[in-house]
Image (cartoon, rainbow, N blue to C red):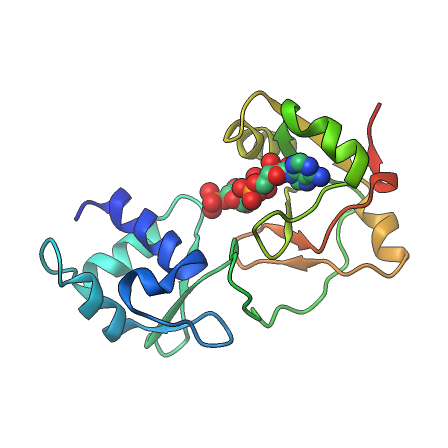
Amino acid sequence: MNNLRLSKLLSLVLRHDPEHLGLQLDSGGWVDVDELLARLSTGSGEVTREHLEMVVSENNKQRFAFSGDGQRIRANQGHSIRVDLGLTPQEPPEILYHGTATRFLDSIREKGVIPGSRQHVHLSQDEPTAVAVGRRHGKPVVLVVRSGEMHREGLSFFLSKNGVWLTDRVARRYLALE
Ligand code: HQG
């Protein structure tokens, strides 16, 4: 299996559909590495621990992490399955960015930014990252989020291990929109 295919399969299984490989995530989103390797190795050839470690360490967005003892693995963020990542709420920067596509703007004006199928709304620390996130859905547009104000009003923010800011939703009034 090539690296990209393995990485995409890990995203699917560790964020959305562990059943795809007959696995289950624990409450923290972890799966046993040996079990994962066994399931990955049934189809088109063996996946070794070394291969998995390489794909995890070289992943361009650091999407996955091993537990401290190396026996378990999970996705750092992006889940649609309900998991508790055990992240501690953090004070966000005054401004964060949400990259989206222009075709969603009308609906966002109405409802604010909502998590869709994922557990959280994903926010970026810088505009170029947000543009790249938005481009996945169409013509990109970057929304400026008044995260500092949200935080002062009691809303929680979490910073994933790979640098993505997460929050439950962003109400219309915290967005700089025309
Ligand atoms: C949009 C990638 C209509 C929202 C990225 C987004 C990220 C609304 C889409 C991570 C809406 C959901 C997540 C509303 C929000 N009406 N559309 N009221 N509120 N939306 O893929 O943020 O490469 O679930 O703007 O880098 O694009 O997978 O979320 O366009 O970190 O690791 O609904 O996925 O990471 O799309 O991306 P997504 P996202 P990975």
